[in-house]
Image 1 (tube, rainbow, N blue to C red):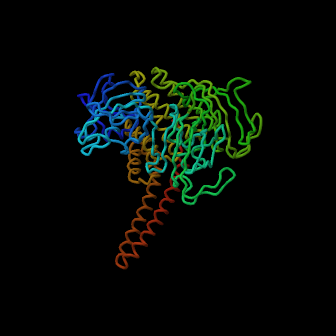
Image 2 (cartoon, rainbow, N blue to C red):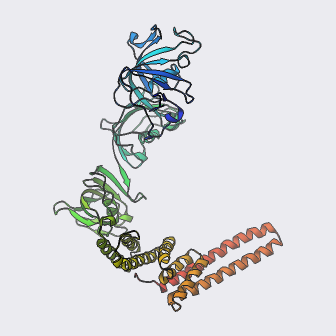
Image 3 (cartoon, rainbow, N blue to C red):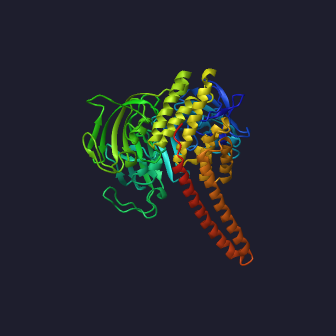
Length: 598
């Protein structure tokens, strides 16, 4: 890709050659047959050549510096005197662009051409044979090159150190490249420098996960740059192959001599994307068939699926959605195991996949009797699943004001039930959704605004209670602060925020919230209780500080170095004791004052 000046000249410089994939660069209209245009070849604009189109090429791709091109050319002086021609020899010429194998102007000319294109280039002396001249070209003489671009091979330095050079022999499809988790089907043949074949895959190829590798470290690195159907040739230096030691023969491969350079023909036949559903690699989804469109199910969606569930040894313990009709469930409602639930919300309609679910997201450490077999404790589960259909839960912006209000009330009540059952994480999600339905920016009439505000505050308060139970103190502080922003002396918000501040050792901020809460409700038993605990914690903190400063004074009058070391040790020990005291006191508060949802 090249850029044009207003005068229809275009410039090739380092910035444009190093453009990022997908970067849009301004360009002039394509040349018409018989039209001539000046090409600027330096950033200073002092060097240029001319291009006249004789025959248009195919497509839009053009070669880049580093690629290997094959061309026919006829070189002549301006007066028509021919000095070189591949056509006379009936033998195309191959060259690697940017490596100085031909005159400079030749490389700059070729990168403007499409496959099959024929063009006439006029090169000034500085882009041709210069002041010396050669090959029948006089000194300081302009030349003309009539060039046909027959083909080119894209060359990529994969690791940017010359260790793995990839030559693209056949381009692939749009799908790709694969990632570390994906399962690939590849074919390859590996040769040594002397042409000896040391490894060949079966006719049908081999399957493996990219991260697991195959044969040598270079293969997964190369595969992560390839697309489905792509065929490449790799030149692999020893540091990405078998190094200075080589390798001994195995059942699969013969011995590899030390410091061997490998020549590999590699084809990425296909690959199956593998998705890390839970971000901890404990629920993996291998896509067997892509679904329709771009939409996936969401939390709260009604999904219709069918699946076959197996143990790792292939024992089928459950089969749903076939003879008895499709299985329907609501996501994020614990109607199926957590791994299946979370994978379902990532699937498109008609998508087929294999799920691998570890015990943490399956049946855990208990044995479970299912329709067809008993699932032993701590079993990894395999689900072959198809997403037949889903109906997404309505988003707030798709609802009327009345529908949003009703949905918020419903989600809040669902959260209350979950809270009472001790399911604080799910309860918190319900309160978040409820608050989203009655967001501050949502359009509600004046007649219900007071009710909406109270509902919103209630959801924030309940969400803060869940966060405290989950020890997510920063989230509790954030939610309580939202309440205080609209209700300055809301006692529950001040009380719960003070609890969170105590657990994060922000005693001063906790004291401020407790004072405000007691101003609003001087007789509140729960607030008085944490005030008492606050005073105990402050006393402990003051005692530690006093001891710290006393030791500091005593030791600095003796041996400063010894005193500093002892001071550090004592400070760590005192901090640990303080943390233990604070945790104990706050656990008392949590036990004695666990407010129910409002």
